[in-house]
Amino acid sequence: MAPETDHAESVRALRQLRRIRTFYAGGAALWAASAVSAGWVDPGSRQMWIAVVLLLVFTTLLSMASLWLWRQQAAGSGEPVHHAAPRKTAWRHHASA
Image 1: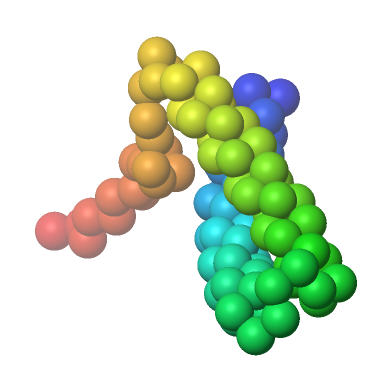
Image 2: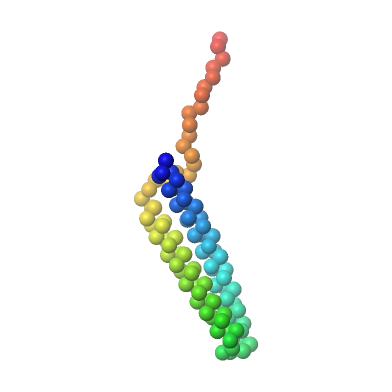
């Protein structure tokens, strides 16, 4: 029973890593646009540097999540993939003749 639970948790963790990677990519894009905008209006301002720091934070988080996802997929590549629950044999009821 434990291997099934571990597999379900592993699949859940991979799904969550994919979602958070998308979130971090969006955050990095947002802070990149903000840093460019603030740098264009007032180069060297405090708002620009805060945006640059947050861009670095989101880029680091994105790269870490991508690395973890890549490692998880590489580690699990040797296992057989089961996309559905195992099929159970149905009870066959025959009408008596």
